Length: 211
Ligand code: HEC
Image (tube, rainbow, N blue to C red):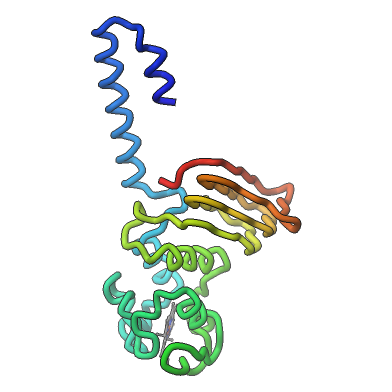
């Protein structure tokens, strides 16, 4: 869009050109800085994940329970007594949250799943967001968040979320009641049989760069 408008004005007099170039540069920088400051289109960093874990009540115990501290990003990626730094693999972290007597890493996390211990358990969208963050390589800053490809299979209900990937996004999920969901991919979006959108929900799909 910027290039087109630039061409359009390329016959203008020199002074007008200068003003236009300057305003395009200002627009470019203001778009970049807005993105970096807000990260509100589905990008995730430690601050968003930490807010979710705190709201769920995980931090009540994980000052250090099980040798696992959620006090900082550095603490998180060190993991706890059982998994150590393998906690950043999504099946390990999500397994401990959702499966009783979860057996992985060096042994068993004894007792109830972490979600059953939490005061305000993580819901399906939050679990999916955590999985996306782990699969994207646990970026500390949301502006560095981007998945290469994704296959969305989770039923989304009452959820507002923007899924954005670098290359290919596939889905066979149900966008159930009162959701507002956007899928955006750099190359291709494929919706398989089973994908459906309830009349009470809003759905958008775009081809666009993961920024
Ligand atoms: C009531 C206290 C309590 C709450 C609340 C709690 N946990 Fe735990 N958690 C523990 C204890 C105790 C262990 C160690 C259990 C063991 O090793 O047998 C543990 C272990 C873990 C482990 C395994 C770490 C490792 O490498 O060994 C993870 C991951 C974890 N918790 C995540 C969470 C998350 C995420 C939440 C919030 C959804 C949460 N916990 C809520 C007490 C709690």
